[in-house]
Image (cartoon, rainbow, N blue to C red; front, side, top):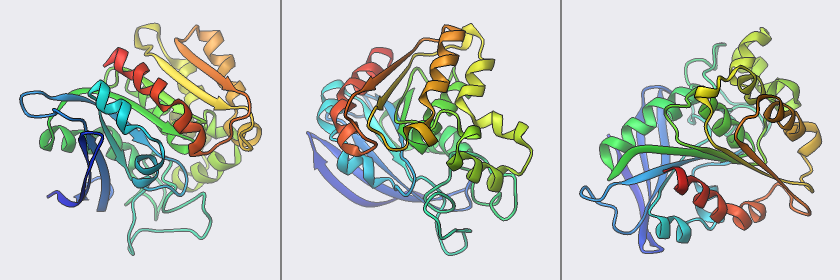
Length: 278
């Protein structure tokens, strides 16, 4: 059952927040949706799903990215889920990079996280089915994200190349099995068998991709991002893209950092990129 908790007119369309009881995460989840002007049952629009980064909620992108004007112009709905399950019964951690706010878009296999931390199933299956059943949207989907959410967007697209027409990311964690954020999260959510980790690593998934499953990717990365070398590992994805001749456009930007100032500077290009494929 969807409960509408906010509704705000913006750029001729509507930004709305909803809560619902999710079967995949066994808790109440919140998401936000932007519906462009003119979206109706007789004029359904495609959707870009946006996955946010560590410590974020459904609100960060919607409030800071400045995406509504371009999305309204192009006729694209945007759906932003939360970044993890939440609630008093959901296991948490005092650190910012694990637990609530840090679901990493995987299906956890390790107790006590495996009951609630099934963000992969939520984003890939449960949420799109809910959106398509209750809102004036088509089944054409793109996926995008930032940082941990950039990891989620690329990984989910690489695992489900027929479900999404395109994927893009800002400052993504592209090789989580080889960085501190990923190693910490994966060891707790997925256990110590690193073979299981590869199923959620964009570099590893791209290495296994067949040409018939290639889909258009766009990545933008700031060269002044203080997480670039230790956590994001963009150069590792460059190597795989070149080796596989994968249709991924990787843009490096001098002077830009990891923040929403960077995202807001190039979000229009990402929406136009997806619009070409939607």
